Image 1 (cartoon, rainbow, N blue to C red):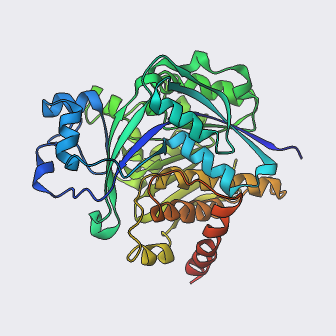
Image 2 (cartoon, rainbow, N blue to C red):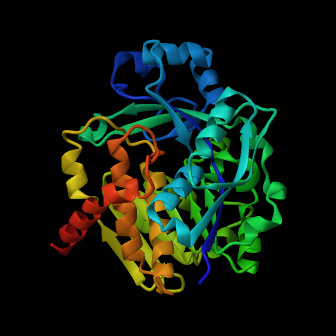
Length: 394
């Protein structure tokens, strides 16, 4: 069997990380959201820079200086649900058995040059990633490791910038010459997101398996506060999706429901082949109709007790990129299972790999882990996977 080809597009940006920001401090109160979609900050949610400036009636730099006390970022890193998950695939799957490609745009500026230089240190092929005469997409990440009883949470201020310039018409034909087509965090790449139905339909016609991992869609939340978010031109997108990965908030907003079970029922009704809904430090919910994965029906899995226990004493990292690395871990397991001869891979096994991969992200700052030697990250994660298998057996 030849190497599995993975084509990915969606959110790729520079993460500017500030750790140890106390969300309960008085100086943050005036920047916190009052009502849904108003442009204020909210734990776990994303706002756009322009909306945030309108909300606080200050320039972004002035507000950020007040929030951070004027200090420099703790880290600048590769970020974005698409590229971070793809990088994780190359670290957790046998790189000799898969080819991972990314398609998108950055800005021809200092952050963009940092981004492309950093990406070249990874094993992701930059098939159609170019720097154009626009600002580089970026997200300021404010992280509070002590939030939610020590489980941690973040707030995001995003600038779409050059990502406005990348649309469905820009994806070259070889994007669809793949075994897996992955659309990650497209809510931050409007030209892709608004045409998801057409892109998914084209991918399916080409014989691709389709995976969608979502991001908080502030653009549509702002446009229609409290209303259900669209995924492409129509709900046909769901029936064209082999695997949908979303966190709790995203699942509720996409489905227009008020509980994980109701959201899952919605996705099943729309004939999505398989769904995974994460919920921070709480258990994940997964479902499959048996057409892509071997299992049929719904199951739940907890988070890793070993990782949770160690995080009580390890405060060097943050939760940035946990969901992205979860998605990458799931996809890496899918690839490894197929290459091992399992034509119908096990969703439970993929979720287990995703859980430990996402959890391990809390041990370092920022979503992207840079390996010094190939296989380093997988070797470090393996003991947590072994412990997790024992945990769920019990």
